[in-house]
Image (cartoon, rainbow, N blue to C red):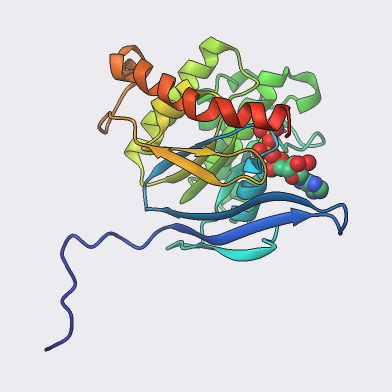
Length: 267
Ligand SMILES: Nc1ncnc2c1ncn2[C@@H]1O[C@H](COP(=O)(O)OP(=O)(O)OP(=O)(O)O)[C@@H](O)[C@H]1O
Ligand SMILES: [Mg+2]
């Protein structure tokens, strides 16, 4: 027998791989077991959504993926082809109050040493796409919550990251703007090879955007189910009115409901 032949359909190596990942906080006897064990592979270009009850460890998982937090046990590997970083949009925005809106959006580009003129142009382009063209020179303190959130989104997208980590990025936005930005994100991720890990409390949002929707249990958060919305790519926001959409939303809510209750009323 010779060497095994690689099969032509062999899946690509994952962009992100979590192996037996756990995280606890604090010291015994007050230890909080926040997350895991979690095993997860995310393929290049895949859009993965995570839903789960409050406090189940979703942000913890994303912070580990962003390299901001170390796992307690297990590991999380990220494979990128270029030096472009993973970009993270925080649940609480994470924008700098002492920088102007333009400087905030340019921040990641400055770190990448993109020439000033090009960085300014790209940052202004993203501000315009977020409806913030007139606020380039403003300071974040003078903006509404939804506008601040859009600054954070523009900052992350401006670096055109290989891996985009988004923690409830649209939670603070009104319903109309949220729909518009979901559609923008669909466009963006379908026209680039971005790999996205997206946390949301909205089942609709997860179904519109995701190739996969992962459901997490109450703390310590584990992945208890996975569903693939039955819509091809490229897709548009029109899937919101498909009968399969409503059916999947009910199914996901059935899966989630017990976990939300368990979190709210611990045994
Ligand atoms: N730095 C920390 N120190 C101590 N405990 C923490 C820390 N970060 C998170 N935790 C705890 O870990 C658990 C998971 O928190 P996490 O923020 O990951 O939840 P989440 O799923 O993102 O919740 P939400 O949906 O409300 O944002 C919570 O019990 C939280 O109190
Ligand atoms: Mg969170």
